[in-house]
Figure 1 (spheres, helix red, strand yellow):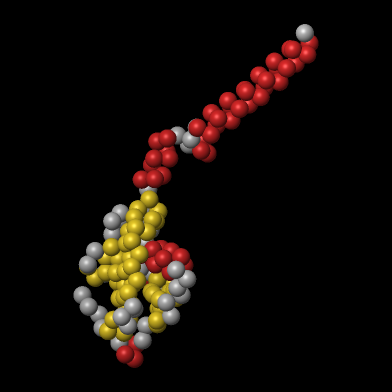
Figure 2 (figure 1 turned 180 degrees about the vertical axis):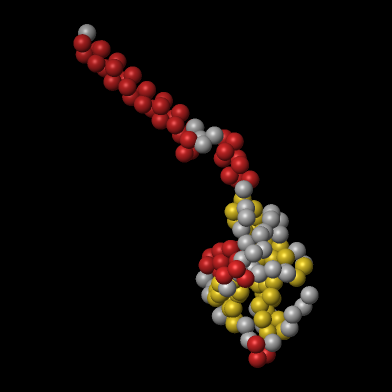
Length: 149
């Protein structure tokens, strides 16, 4: 009889542990509620990027996922890192960051060619580290002559 009782206890412990593990796997991770996890998903935005290198080479990147509140610079850093492109920018403190080169193509004051960007077909009026993106934005970077408004 003692052996049967031990077997029943072992089986109960095994299935109890299995059930408990399954309940943990089904519950929200990190103790967060379903509403909190849903809010985290909603805090992610999706934007698109086009890079026109001014030499016939154009690269497009659709549906880039970023955290809500990300800037144009955050987008550019993410895409250039993921595609092994060089990105050079300089932070000017309160004035913000300035992009100096993308993919090895540097701004060239002597030929009046610079990297410039548009968001949703509108020429940007603020620096790359100040422009906050929203879901659905389309960012275009062009290496062109002069400033086009």
